[in-house]
Amino acid sequence: MQLKNYDYIFLGAGCASLSIIMRMIASQKFNQKKILLIDKEPKTKNDRTWCFWEHQPGFFEEIVYRKWDQLLFKTTDETTPLQMDNYEYKMIRGIDFYNKCFSEIAQHKNIDTLYGEISFEEIKNGLTEIKINNELLVYNEHAIIFNSIYIPLKKTKVTFYLLQHFTGWIVETKENVFTPKQATIMDFRVHQNNGTTFVYALPLAANRALIEYTLFSENILPENEYDKELKLYLNEFLQIHDYTICEKEFGIIPMTNEKFSFFKNGMYFIGTAGGQTKASTGFTFRFIQKQADAIVEQLILKGNLFKNKQTKKRFLFYDSTLLHILSKKMMEGKTIFSILFKKNKASAIFKFLDNETTIAEEIKLLKTLPKKIFIKAGFKEFIKMIRNII
Image (tube, rainbow, N blue to C red; front, side, top):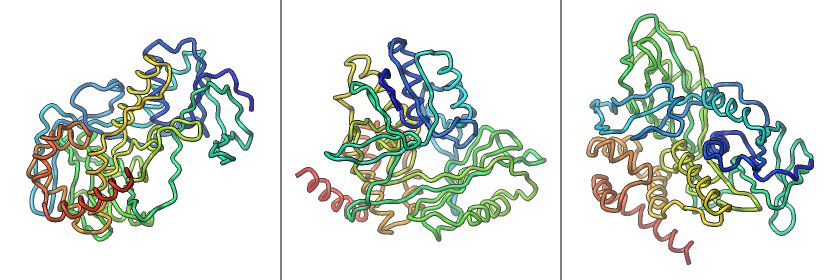
């Protein structure tokens, strides 16, 4: 397949690729550049929901479906209203995101979309061939290739591999039973038999809500288990028995401290494939937006991506320490998050989980966690990091 006239090629039409392309369009600096977007098939389904916190309007603010400035954190013992300050918890539906992006892309003749099965084949000297429907992709040697297709690396003994897996139902009730302005970000009243487990309850209207059963563990559950637990949660904890399931979603997000490459085999890796999923929480959307900002800014200023702003190593260390504790079952995630949200403002936690805090702010927050366990896990992860550096 001859594609020699493109300056930029994007493999995968997900959040990462579309976020970069939309910024390219908005900048008006790439109107003379040829851009190609490749994916398996058109995006016509509401296949996912992104939830995230922000303290100011974001790039995709106009398609935010719902947002909440009142959040609750629940455990068996108590319900804690979170101190949000100027943060809002926001939701963007996948279908709204795709429609927004592709309607904008359709107005620009320098951007083409191609559909086909993408595959990779390693060849000599560490290079990788890209194939579309098993046909070799031949492109301009000066083209910049972005790859957002996540392929797990071979597991190692020094790396942790958990999954954030979830099933969400959008339910509708006959009566008004939800408080639209108030959402539950984590409800830990559910059992913890399968690992760190909690439920999101995000009202969309007085009689409509997204209820999502979420776990951090090594293995996913049988499909009927998620459905059983969601039904149990609605019946026992929300006292809702008469409802209709309007939509259903299932997702798996990697939670790993494996070392991701930004550039490898002639391609730049973006999104989850480029390490933009927060290892300790699974949150991805905001990190993708920050990476997209940095990439487009660098392309405008320098025309290349030789210098890439990397995640500061101390945040990778914090993530590895938490994964160590959860993977080794040194302490339940329920206990860790309960302490964290009980002793700190939610706004401080959000800033920390966005990798935006100062060292002084981090010390203040980390001091509220159980010292013995975190020091023990942190020491082991610190030794690993030192050995990798040497």
